[in-house]
Every structure is written in C-alpha cells, then in structure tokens.
Amino acid sequence: MAKILIVDDDAATAARIAQELKEAGHACAVCTSGRDVLEIARKESLDLLVLDVMLPDVSGFEVCRQIRRDSSLDTLPVLFLSAMDNPEEVRHGLEQGADDYVTKPFDLHQVTQRVEALLRASASEDYIDQVTNLPDAEGSRRRVQQLITRQSASAVILVELLHLHRFGTSQGGAARDKTLRHLARALKLCGENFHERDFLVGHWGGGFFICAVPAAEAKSYCKKVQHSWRKHLSSLHESSGIVHQLDASKEGASGVPESLDLLFCVTGREGNEPVSAQQMLDTLSRIRRSVGDVGVGGIHMDRRLG
Image (cartoon, rainbow, N blue to C red; front, side, top):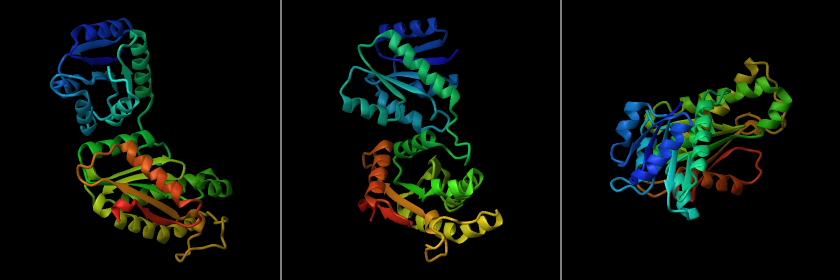
C-alpha cells in the first residue's frame, strides 16, 4: 500500500482518482491547493504525488520544482495531470522534474497503471550505481535538475574515460571496475572544496561520468581532474598488477596510454537563463558528437562559456 496525495482544484476529479486508487489498495488524500503540498509531503512521508498543472494559487510546475529543490523530497515520484496535450507542453512538464504526464480527459484505469508503474520503479531503484557508489544516470539527472531549479549558475560536465571497453576486454572486468572507482574518487576529491549543494559527481554508465560544478570553476576543475588522473593512473595500475596493452606505443606527454585518457565536454547556464536538465544533457551529447572519434583526451567547452 502506498501513500498518495492527489492535488487538483477540481474536487470531483480528485475524488474519482482517489477512489480508483483506494480500490487498488492505496491510501489516498486529496488537496485542492498547491500552496500546502510541500508541508503535507514532508509531514506524511508520501510515496507518490498526482499533481494537476493548472492550480489556482501555485502552478503544478512550480510545486514540482520546489519538490526537486528539497533534498528530503527530491526523489518523490510526481505524475502530472493536465488538459494541455501539446507535445511541447508535455516536454516542458517533464523538464520541470516530473516522472510522467497524463493528459485530460483521461481514463481512470490509465492513471492507475501509470501510478503503479511509478511506484514499482521507485521501490526498485535507489539511483546508486553499484560499481562506483555514485548516483547513477537517473540520480544524476535529478540532481542536475535540483541545481537548475535552485537557479544556480552551474556547469555540467560529461567526463569520458576513453576506450574503456577495449581496456576491459584486455585487462578483465575487475581491472575495469577498479579503474572506474579510481576515477570516481579523483572526480570527487578534485571538487572537495566546492559546497555540497553546488557539486555533483555521478556515473552515467560505462566510461561516462556526469559532474556539476559552479560555472566559473568549470575549466579549472577539468584541468585539475586531468592532471590528477594522468599523474596517478600508472601508479594505480602498477600497484594492482594491471599491464597496459592498449595502444602502448602511443603515450601522451604524461606517459599515460592515450586509450585511458579523459575527454571533457562542458556546458552550462548563467544565472536565471531558462534551461532544463535535459537540455543541458542534450547539449553535452551534441558537443561530444562534434568532437568525433578521438584517441586522446582534452577539454571541449560550450562556446557560450568561453
């Protein structure tokens, strides 16, 4: 049984949804105002929020942004309800941090199915990557969204450990995972002077990591990580009995095999510039594609950041 709050200024609609979900075995409460949602959510330890977008006092979009800014509520699943069914409106809603979006008029069975799917996903996912013990892709996306909704001047960085698959094939899974954990520690240590609220390191999967830092510090952070990585990687592998076999004849100036170098792609936003987490991640993907198939690392900045 899950504890669910339905927020809709149409009391009849909210009551219908609540009755349907109660029949499915959940405990439901109804609220017709957006103003009190955060207080209720904190007090009642909700498992899911069904939230109408068009509320008379505070919009559902703003309520969702407030939830994603709150560290005690930021993983609460949010299902938007809205009469706005334009694809751009739906996309905008999801970019505010919602987990799903149902347009009105809707079938009650459809709402129940979406609720059950979100509850299953929430119960089975702690958003932590098991290899690095960092936030995984979804956890990282949520943290980036938190930074944006706090209106932080943040840079988001895609860090790629080049040719990880080839390295793992050559040296084995244990060596690959140890190298990933070593990089995870380096990324965290190089940002230890940043305030926790302004700093993120997450594992996007494979050889990709996502970092968020204050925008003014983005390039210097990348250089610091790059220096630390190139300085300590060889000694790490020597102490672990790992032998470099990939492109051993090609070494950068640091003596580190190019196949294990780091590539950084950086984007960001200044102040109140309107942008979503997904837009920033999409920009990182475009920057990475523009770099092409490289064998050596480097730092590639969004032109807006200089």
